[in-house]
Length: 195
Image 1 (cartoon, rainbow, N blue to C red):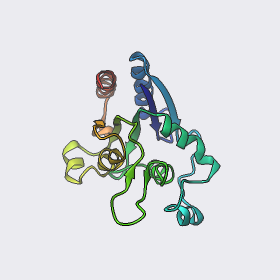
Image 2: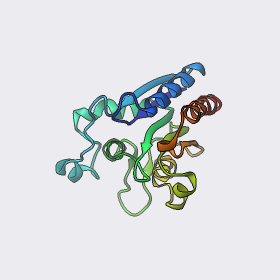
Image 3: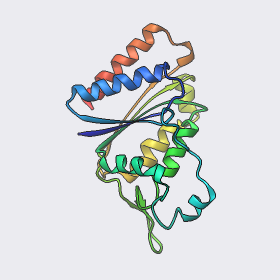
Image 4: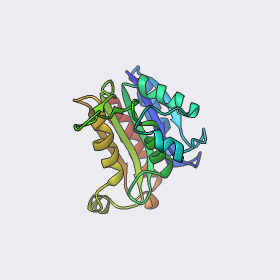
């Protein structure tokens, strides 16, 4: 299986980096092929400019900086998102990546008249989210887990009809210990290898 790992964290030595590395190891252990998109390392520009927005409904993005990202999406059969949950949602860089790359004639087609959009990511059969949250589990659920819903409901709706999902979160990250972090990394490895 071809797995795209989309990683978003600005600090190279963050716990999210350890999560990313564990995910990549688990993917390799299953004999799958992985590609890593590290948004901060490549200084991805998440800002959609006015000209890009004006053309958004008419055709796929024409910015050459997005070409490799679009090719990665077309290549992938599974996608693993690794990011910190900030203010209950996605980091702005990751949200901007979704805005700019999951675009018309890449991830979906708009209807010519009334009717639903047509998904174009039907080759993707699995999506996983692995995140860290400063909030406790109960509060994250109380506020609705917006980041989780964006990916596992919204993005998933553009993928294969029977696309499977996985969500893993290390809650209370700011109060975590070496033991809780090590336990979470073991869980990530175990769940991804089974997924």
